[in-house]
Length: 365
Image (cartoon, rainbow, N blue to C red; front, top):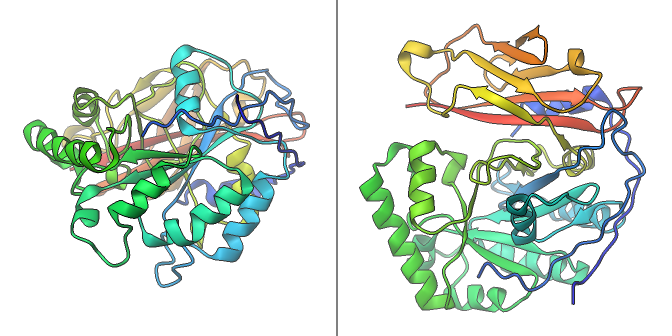
């Protein structure tokens, strides 16, 4: 039977707080926490629903603040997620609904962890288990094989995998920069990790998180060829029906961007659903830098003029409206590496409720 948990809490987030974080940073189908629930602060300019996913790395490892959440922060997150009107779903169920074209319950959120750090086993898992919250952990196999001291062992991962609340996903073998790796090398790396998962856990993961959140069309093709049914980046945003299951965003949680305001905003975010997004790939070429960005908003919203877009390198960007078509203009060429674009749109009559959120990754080689 499906275990149900209805999680309710009010939410009132200021627009200023939202913009402050806009620039910030095995499939075990066992237990699926699902319960249709009407949020008290639902969007008032359309009945579109969606889902968001949060991402952790380390827990209580205070010497790594950019990838760590302090334990008091983490416990506050759990208290929020188990006392609010959020619907916490296992990641496999979120992917299943997205691929099947099924609607999401109000304020659907999923929980993921990247890298198999030991603190996942000692700190996060006991707390999630006590709270009855499902999560997916994405594992790179090389650190496990090499028995790094701050990582879990295969024995600990096997223990985790027996918990019906836990899904094991892949993060490749060597945690390589997939976007800068050719298809042959990618295939070898993914085969190595998949073979190890099969040997040590008895199954091959069906979900992948791209290391460093980096992906493009050729990374997605390699992931499909390796058997993955969905892929996750590290760009912020919500998603909904019709979105690409191999380009799913996640909200990062760490010491600097892990307060309750950010968690509440992420957990209640709605998607800005778009069509005809340009450019069609994440890689930015030298002859189109900065890229010409455009998309058509397909949500029925009467507040489209209030859309605001930001990049982590340039800040607030110029937005031009051509009917439902949005053109975003960057003034500066993007630097080498990752650039994240975030566009936000308030809902409701006051602008103090939930937000629609579109996140995209760009990459300069």
